[in-house]
Length: 153
Ligand code: HEC
Image (cartoon, rainbow, N blue to C red; front, side, top):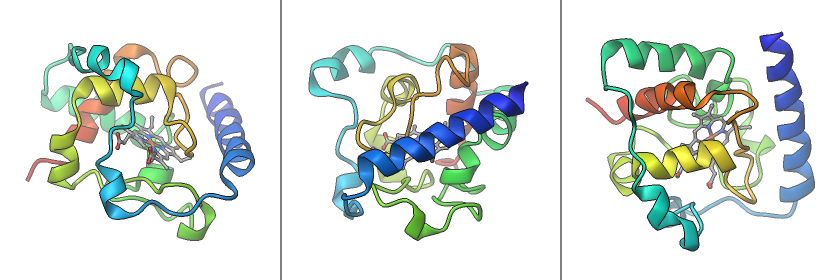
């Protein structure tokens, strides 16, 4: 059942991607730091904080979701640096997944903004909403603990 949801989600992600993004070019580097949450919602989004501790246990749970049923790894890579082996760079023509190990990017984003993206997706890109179809809110916070761990030495 879990893998069926994932495959269906993946198919709609890819389909939606081709419909929406066929004509866009790749993002330039400075574009990576531009806020993704719309201006009228970003202030509210930034007040939201991760209710879970940054413990080894939460990071491990997040890693299991990132690599497992939430298939983040497919696009964000096993090392968080971008495309994994499953997707060739030429396949995604919108803005590419950023490097999660980039400290400038880590510092530019609040947890609340990242959570907003998991709920709403990033409009006009291959990043789709994952809550509630793939992740519960609690699982999303676990995944974000793992995403944050890429910024640690
Ligand atoms: C189909 C490919 C794909 C999958 C699967 C995917 N992402 Fe993304 N993600 C992207 C792309 C492309 C972007 C860049 C969007 C942009 O530039 O606004 C992105 C952006 C993001 C961002 C926002 C980055 C920012 O700069 O604010 C976060 C956080 C994120 N992804 C986390 C995840 C997590 C966690 C998962 C798994 C639950 C996941 N993504 C699954 C393609 C994907």
